[in-house]
Structures are given as C-alpha cells and as structure tokens.
Image 1 (cartoon, rainbow, N blue to C red):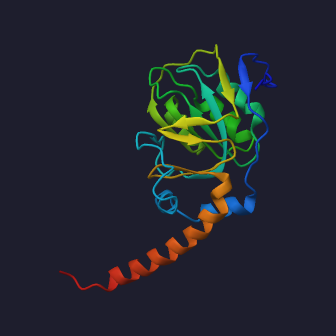
Image 2 (image 1 turned 60 degrees about the horizontal axis):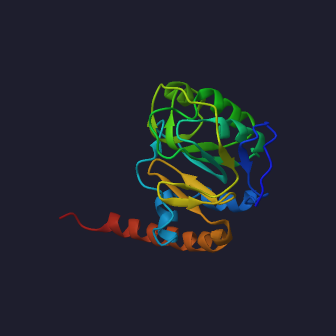
Length: 216
C-alpha cells in the first residue's frame, strides 16, 4: 500500500488510510469506568505493560487513538501528527521504549491540546514534566529525560502500532488512568460497554457486602 506525505510536508512520514473514530456518546460510556474494569471486560487483555506510567499524578484520559510510529529518539512523525488531530483524539506513540531522548515535551503538549487532543501515551521518553503538569495535559510515558530528540524520521501516522506489547489501531478507544492503559478495539466497543455495565453493578454489590462483613 502506498502512503502520501502528511500535510506537514515530511516526505518520509507515511499516513495510513482514513480511519473511523468513535462517536462522542460511545466514548462517554467508557469515561465512567476505570482501566481495571475495562481490562476485566476485555478478558484481562488489551492492557500494555505497567512500565508506561502517568507523567503527573491524577492523569486520566479517554479518546480515540491517533497512532504514531517514530524512530527511537526522533520526533518528526510526532510533529507531523499534529496536522491529523481531531477533537477527542488521544495520541498513542510507539517510540520503541527508548529512554535516551524525549520524543515530546511541553511545546508539543500545547500543540496537541490546542487542536483538541485529550492526552498522549508514549512508549518512550518525554521531557518537561513540570511544565506538562502545569498545563494539566494528561501524558503517560515509559521514562523522562531532559535530552531532546532528533528530527529526521522516518515514521508513520494512522497505522497500527504496538505499545507495551499491545497492538493499537487508529480509532480504537483508549482509556488511561493512574493504574495504566487499556485499548478497546472499536469493533468491540459496544459489546464491551454492555459488559462494563454488568461489571460495575456486580462490583457495587460486592463493595456493599464487604462493608457489612464483620471484622475479624
């Protein structure tokens, strides 16, 4: 398959075919649930490893995956992804887990937020932790380093990527909180939302029973 250069003009950054995004109502179904419960609804699959953690305490985001594949320590594809952001997108960046150079910082966080992105997940390094926290922009990463990136490419936007051992497709529903991250395939989202409602009801009942249990 042949890909066209992005509107940002980087000829060596590929762009996948146009993908579908979740509607606002469906995203709202997942905003009410924790990553842990969503993971349970998925059969305890779809959750990247625990090495990708919030950059600041209290991060939470729910959005449609805007996927980015970038060379380790290089942010050209991340920069180009800005042109493809639509409101409600959550950037999912495969930086090959590399911790030597950050592939985003507070300036890119500003760009993401100004175009309506709800957060960013980086399987790699970020920098400017304090500034990102002050912005209140939700970011998860595998590591933090002050070292800046190369800007050479190549890379891709809007193609399947793997983060923490889990494949994420463009448009998948991604939820991230203090516990970690889960990716829900868009084609399964309505079914998973139904299962989630059942899990939430069951857990509410179990909590009520636990409160009534006599102390030992």
